[in-house]
Image (cartoon, rainbow, N blue to C red):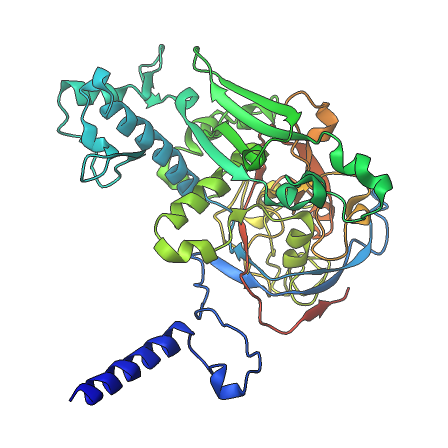
Length: 483
């Protein structure tokens, strides 16, 4: 009986040993050959409202310089990896969800504040055993919009203001600030910023000792709210001290500039758009405008964090939402045929005399395509990548800093030129590439290769954006797009 028990024990131990070695063929079964250790299977879920743009190559730019506008466009053969892209521009409704999230987070902070009653259930600071933890807002706790007591009502009303002339109650735009952090993995990976001096120069020649031992200077962005409630932004330059030097902090006022409709067009009666375009439900499905490059980046950060909180353990496998690079945008806009416009033909009208996009025909008739200003997102046919409004409607921010050299100064693989301009930098360094043309632009400016720019802190009534997300792995065959 003891021998039988001993055999059972040894067999159980053998099974445990095999299970600890991982799944697949064991080393014992392959005669000691290396077979590799495979991870768990992963299938990337299709992001809501996005379509895949598969990896491939393209000759970027226009073959002939623009004779009408006198613009030269750099040309180059490039290759890009696969990515997900919003099938339409970000709408007013989606951006309003961002604004409302910021509003509700402020209200929850104040409901937990002793000055407003101190309901600690709105902000969790201890675990079930009473141990202190990193505080977080309890989004399962519903804000009492209709049945609030006096303290709760004060907290809710604190994010609103009353117009001093007409008495209209409206959201206090000055309070709508979103704080987020981005870790610069690219900078942290560069050898010149290694924390271990021995790794900064792999050449072991003694003449490079000075390179290894020199003081390394790193710049990082930080921001805070001062005593007057104003955002203070600063770029700190200091000696490298640790991994936290690569963590950048941003605080951005995210409420769109609704006055852009008046400021962009002098001697025009656009007051109705200033009052209605972002706030009225009639414009829910229209592209958001009046959003700066900085605000668009803040939306991408919020959208990422909003997604990751709902994914649990899968979150580590998912790439962040971001703005498309200038080259990704053109690659996606040209479609599978790589034409001058997102559609197959070189004309802007179909055989049935219907426009392919919302723009300003060269004759100057804004309404000939059916819209005076913007049109609903996705109102025209998608291109062969499944993307809507890649020409006209609103021009779109990209992540790329604008230079005349364009793609000529970038790599030919996943080209990008990025520069996070500090507040004190010259204004010319704050130019960001804008693509696609808008509802106010003529036919010449809605071509996929057309390049222009806007300053990163400048909101416009004709510039919006859409998000992209890098694919974990694009298993499709390469596609080549030739003009």
